[in-house]
Image 1 (tube, rainbow, N blue to C red):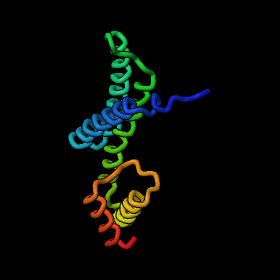
Image 2 (image 1 turned 180 degrees about the vertical axis):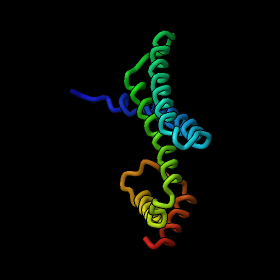
Image 3 (image 1 turned 45 degrees about the horizontal axis):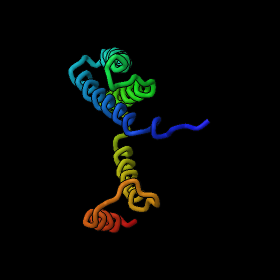
Image 4 (image 1 turned 120 degrees about the vertical axis):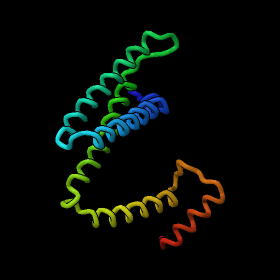
Length: 149
């Protein structure tokens, strides 16, 4: 059995995932901002059901159009995008509701350390997935040198 990774993880699937994630983040934040704090979870569950159903119906609609096709993997990417997109506003809502109990100082320091480590890995990556122009590469080297890596 051979898997076609371009078909499974190709640009089309990535666009489905990202577009539904962005849509979910925007709509989820609207719910978090304008809803009663006790109804946020229930309304986000309804939003998730609606967006996943819409994504599946959209694939069926594409089946009826010429030069388009319905794909199970597109619907799966839509569903994963909705799940990731709605997790972000729910996490933000949790942090703001429990900000007195949340370990914010440790989280902030930990985040700074992680960001620094990821920038260092971006610079040291042996198989680069992103190439920088000369001036950007020099700026990144200067930042890494300033940090001390």
